[in-house]
Figure (cartoon, rainbow, N blue to C red):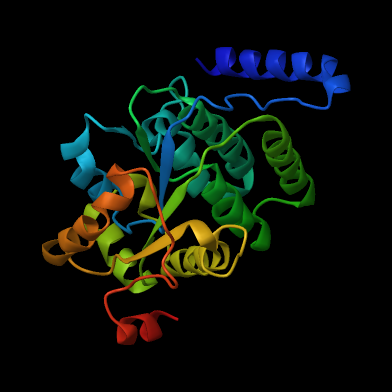
Length: 261
Protein backbone atom coordinates (compact mmCIF):
# COMPACT_ATOMS: atom_id res chain seq x y z
CA UNK A 1 0.00 0.00 0.00
CA UNK A 2 2.84 2.37 0.88
CA UNK A 3 4.62 1.88 -2.48
CA UNK A 4 1.36 2.19 -4.40
CA UNK A 5 0.50 5.49 -2.70
CA UNK A 6 3.91 6.99 -3.48
CA UNK A 7 3.67 5.75 -7.06
CA UNK A 8 0.24 7.33 -7.56
CA UNK A 9 1.38 10.64 -6.08
CA UNK A 10 4.57 10.81 -8.16
CA UNK A 11 2.71 9.89 -11.36
CA UNK A 12 0.07 12.51 -10.60
CA UNK A 13 2.66 15.22 -9.95
CA UNK A 14 4.58 14.36 -13.13
CA UNK A 15 1.37 14.56 -15.12
CA UNK A 16 0.64 17.90 -13.49
CA UNK A 17 4.06 19.23 -14.46
CA UNK A 18 3.40 18.41 -18.09
CA UNK A 19 0.16 20.38 -17.88
CA UNK A 20 1.75 23.37 -16.17
CA UNK A 21 1.25 25.54 -19.24
CA UNK A 22 -2.47 25.66 -18.47
CA UNK A 23 -1.77 27.37 -15.15
CA UNK A 24 -4.22 25.03 -13.40
CA UNK A 25 -2.70 21.98 -11.73
CA UNK A 26 -5.07 20.21 -9.33
CA UNK A 27 -3.55 18.70 -6.23
CA UNK A 28 -3.53 14.96 -5.72
CA UNK A 29 -6.72 13.85 -3.85
CA UNK A 30 -8.41 17.22 -4.43
CA UNK A 31 -12.19 16.87 -4.44
CA UNK A 32 -12.11 13.33 -3.05
CA UNK A 33 -12.48 14.02 0.68
CA UNK A 34 -15.57 14.70 2.81
CA UNK A 35 -15.88 17.19 5.66
CA UNK A 36 -12.80 16.31 7.71
CA UNK A 37 -12.29 16.82 11.44
CA UNK A 38 -8.85 16.47 13.01
CA UNK A 39 -8.60 15.47 16.68
CA UNK A 40 -5.46 16.98 18.18
CA UNK A 41 -3.86 17.15 21.60
CA UNK A 42 -0.95 16.08 23.75
CA UNK A 43 -0.06 12.48 24.53
CA UNK A 44 -2.75 11.20 26.91
CA UNK A 45 -5.23 13.99 26.14
CA UNK A 46 -8.08 11.55 25.42
CA UNK A 47 -8.10 11.35 21.62
CA UNK A 48 -9.01 7.66 21.58
CA UNK A 49 -11.78 8.26 24.13
CA UNK A 50 -13.12 11.03 21.90
CA UNK A 51 -13.18 8.73 18.87
CA UNK A 52 -14.89 6.00 20.89
CA UNK A 53 -17.66 8.44 21.76
CA UNK A 54 -18.40 8.95 18.06
CA UNK A 55 -18.51 5.27 17.19
CA UNK A 56 -22.26 5.47 17.73
CA UNK A 57 -22.44 7.54 14.51
CA UNK A 58 -20.44 5.18 12.28
CA UNK A 59 -23.11 5.24 9.59
CA UNK A 60 -22.20 8.91 9.03
CA UNK A 61 -18.59 9.14 10.19
CA UNK A 62 -15.43 7.44 8.94
CA UNK A 63 -13.25 7.02 12.05
CA UNK A 64 -9.49 6.85 11.45
CA UNK A 65 -7.26 6.20 14.43
CA UNK A 66 -3.62 7.20 14.67
CA UNK A 67 -1.66 4.44 12.86
CA UNK A 68 0.34 3.45 15.94
CA UNK A 69 0.28 -0.26 15.04
CA UNK A 70 2.01 0.51 11.75
CA UNK A 71 4.73 2.40 13.64
CA UNK A 72 5.14 -0.55 16.01
CA UNK A 73 5.58 -3.05 13.20
CA UNK A 74 7.44 -1.96 10.08
CA UNK A 75 8.15 -5.45 8.76
CA UNK A 76 8.96 -6.57 12.28
CA UNK A 77 10.70 -3.37 13.44
CA UNK A 78 9.11 -1.31 16.24
CA UNK A 79 10.03 2.20 15.07
CA UNK A 80 8.06 3.85 17.86
CA UNK A 81 10.00 2.04 20.55
CA UNK A 82 13.32 2.71 18.84
CA UNK A 83 12.49 6.40 18.49
CA UNK A 84 11.84 6.76 22.23
CA UNK A 85 14.89 4.64 23.13
CA UNK A 86 17.44 6.25 20.75
CA UNK A 87 15.85 9.43 19.37
CA UNK A 88 19.08 10.83 17.90
CA UNK A 89 19.34 7.76 15.67
CA UNK A 90 15.71 6.92 14.95
CA UNK A 91 13.78 10.22 15.01
CA UNK A 92 14.39 10.96 11.33
CA UNK A 93 13.25 7.57 9.90
CA UNK A 94 10.38 7.50 12.37
CA UNK A 95 9.06 10.91 11.35
CA UNK A 96 9.52 10.07 7.67
CA UNK A 97 7.31 7.02 8.18
CA UNK A 98 4.80 9.00 10.25
CA UNK A 99 4.48 11.45 7.34
CA UNK A 100 3.79 8.63 4.91
CA UNK A 101 1.24 6.85 7.10
CA UNK A 102 -0.55 10.11 7.86
CA UNK A 103 -0.79 10.84 4.14
CA UNK A 104 -2.39 7.43 3.68
CA UNK A 105 -5.03 8.41 6.25
CA UNK A 106 -5.56 11.88 4.79
CA UNK A 107 -6.07 10.56 1.26
CA UNK A 108 -8.10 7.48 2.22
CA UNK A 109 -11.42 7.67 0.44
CA UNK A 110 -14.79 7.08 2.02
CA UNK A 111 -18.43 7.35 0.98
CA UNK A 112 -19.41 8.71 4.38
CA UNK A 113 -20.08 12.46 4.68
CA UNK A 114 -17.65 13.03 7.58
CA UNK A 115 -14.10 11.84 8.26
CA UNK A 116 -12.79 11.96 11.84
CA UNK A 117 -9.00 11.62 12.14
CA UNK A 118 -6.86 11.12 15.23
CA UNK A 119 -3.97 13.55 14.75
CA UNK A 120 -2.66 14.67 11.36
CA UNK A 121 0.36 15.52 9.30
CA UNK A 122 0.10 19.03 10.75
CA UNK A 123 0.72 17.96 14.36
CA UNK A 124 3.63 15.84 13.17
CA UNK A 125 5.13 18.91 11.53
CA UNK A 126 4.33 21.71 13.97
CA UNK A 127 4.63 19.80 17.25
CA UNK A 128 6.66 16.61 17.16
CA UNK A 129 9.25 17.40 14.48
CA UNK A 130 9.58 20.98 15.73
CA UNK A 131 10.21 19.73 19.25
CA UNK A 132 12.90 17.36 18.03
CA UNK A 133 14.61 20.19 16.20
CA UNK A 134 14.47 22.63 19.12
CA UNK A 135 15.99 19.99 21.39
CA UNK A 136 18.71 19.17 18.83
CA UNK A 137 17.54 15.58 18.50
CA UNK A 138 17.57 16.06 14.74
CA UNK A 139 20.18 18.31 13.16
CA UNK A 140 19.73 21.02 10.55
CA UNK A 141 20.11 18.65 7.62
CA UNK A 142 17.46 16.20 8.88
CA UNK A 143 15.08 19.02 9.75
CA UNK A 144 15.37 20.71 6.37
CA UNK A 145 14.85 17.43 4.50
CA UNK A 146 11.58 16.95 6.41
CA UNK A 147 10.58 20.56 5.71
CA UNK A 148 11.18 19.97 1.99
CA UNK A 149 8.83 17.01 2.16
CA UNK A 150 6.19 19.10 3.91
CA UNK A 151 6.55 21.86 1.31
CA UNK A 152 6.17 19.33 -1.49
CA UNK A 153 3.04 17.97 0.16
CA UNK A 154 1.63 21.48 0.60
CA UNK A 155 2.11 22.22 -3.07
CA UNK A 156 1.09 18.86 -4.55
CA UNK A 157 -1.32 16.97 -2.27
CA UNK A 158 -4.67 18.10 -0.95
CA UNK A 159 -4.97 17.60 2.81
CA UNK A 160 -8.54 18.26 3.89
CA UNK A 161 -8.95 20.02 7.25
CA UNK A 162 -12.33 21.66 7.86
CA UNK A 163 -12.33 21.60 11.65
CA UNK A 164 -9.75 20.93 14.35
CA UNK A 165 -10.86 19.75 17.79
CA UNK A 166 -8.12 20.60 20.28
CA UNK A 167 -8.32 18.47 23.42
CA UNK A 168 -6.58 20.97 25.65
CA UNK A 169 -4.90 19.54 28.74
CA UNK A 170 -2.29 20.41 31.34
CA UNK A 171 0.97 18.44 31.25
CA UNK A 172 0.60 17.10 34.81
CA UNK A 173 -2.77 15.55 34.02
CA UNK A 174 -1.61 13.79 30.86
CA UNK A 175 1.56 12.62 32.59
CA UNK A 176 -0.51 10.79 35.20
CA UNK A 177 -2.75 9.31 32.50
CA UNK A 178 0.28 8.14 30.56
CA UNK A 179 1.71 6.44 33.64
CA UNK A 180 -1.60 4.65 34.32
CA UNK A 181 -2.03 3.29 30.79
CA UNK A 182 1.59 2.03 30.91
CA UNK A 183 2.46 1.66 27.24
CA UNK A 184 5.91 0.12 27.09
CA UNK A 185 7.15 2.66 24.52
CA UNK A 186 6.17 5.58 26.79
CA UNK A 187 7.85 4.31 29.97
CA UNK A 188 10.85 6.62 29.47
CA UNK A 189 8.87 9.77 28.58
CA UNK A 190 9.53 12.60 31.12
CA UNK A 191 7.04 15.29 32.04
CA UNK A 192 9.36 17.87 30.45
CA UNK A 193 8.60 16.32 27.05
CA UNK A 194 4.85 16.70 27.65
CA UNK A 195 5.36 20.32 28.73
CA UNK A 196 7.26 21.03 25.51
CA UNK A 197 4.55 19.39 23.38
CA UNK A 198 1.87 21.37 25.22
CA UNK A 199 3.66 24.63 24.42
CA UNK A 200 3.94 23.69 20.73
CA UNK A 201 0.25 22.75 20.53
CA UNK A 202 -0.61 26.14 22.01
CA UNK A 203 1.63 27.92 19.49
CA UNK A 204 0.10 26.01 16.60
CA UNK A 205 -3.60 25.90 17.51
CA UNK A 206 -4.16 28.95 19.73
CA UNK A 207 -1.61 31.53 18.58
CA UNK A 208 -1.31 30.75 14.85
CA UNK A 209 -3.89 32.67 12.78
CA UNK A 210 -3.43 30.27 9.85
CA UNK A 211 -5.12 27.53 11.88
CA UNK A 212 -6.93 28.96 14.90
CA UNK A 213 -10.00 30.02 12.91
CA UNK A 214 -10.75 26.30 12.44
CA UNK A 215 -10.23 25.28 16.07
CA UNK A 216 -12.71 24.25 18.74
CA UNK A 217 -11.10 23.89 22.17
CA UNK A 218 -12.38 21.34 24.68
CA UNK A 219 -11.32 21.09 28.31
CA UNK A 220 -9.83 17.60 28.24
CA UNK A 221 -8.55 17.77 31.83
CA UNK A 222 -12.01 16.62 32.92
CA UNK A 223 -12.27 13.06 34.19
CA UNK A 224 -14.13 10.37 32.28
CA UNK A 225 -17.31 10.92 34.28
CA UNK A 226 -17.64 14.49 32.98
CA UNK A 227 -15.81 14.57 29.65
CA UNK A 228 -18.71 12.84 27.89
CA UNK A 229 -20.88 15.95 28.33
CA UNK A 230 -18.16 18.03 26.64
CA UNK A 231 -18.07 15.66 23.69
CA UNK A 232 -21.86 15.71 23.41
CA UNK A 233 -21.89 19.52 23.23
CA UNK A 234 -19.97 19.34 19.94
CA UNK A 235 -21.72 16.42 18.27
CA UNK A 236 -23.63 18.68 15.89
CA UNK A 237 -20.46 20.44 14.74
CA UNK A 238 -19.09 17.08 13.64
CA UNK A 239 -22.13 15.04 12.59
CA UNK A 240 -23.51 17.97 10.60
CA UNK A 241 -20.61 19.09 8.35
CA UNK A 242 -21.08 22.76 9.00
CA UNK A 243 -18.99 24.81 11.40
CA UNK A 244 -19.53 28.43 12.37
CA UNK A 245 -16.64 29.57 14.49
CA UNK A 246 -17.59 31.07 17.83
CA UNK A 247 -16.01 34.36 18.83
CA UNK A 248 -13.62 32.60 21.20
CA UNK A 249 -12.68 29.06 22.08
CA UNK A 250 -15.14 27.43 24.47
CA UNK A 251 -13.88 25.94 27.70
CA UNK A 252 -15.81 24.85 30.79
CA UNK A 253 -15.27 28.10 32.67
CA UNK A 254 -13.33 31.38 32.41
CA UNK A 255 -11.43 30.51 35.59
CA UNK A 256 -10.32 27.22 34.06
CA UNK A 257 -9.14 29.04 30.97
CA UNK A 258 -7.05 31.48 33.03
CA UNK A 259 -5.36 28.60 34.87
CA UNK A 260 -4.32 26.99 31.58
CA UNK A 261 -3.01 30.15 29.92
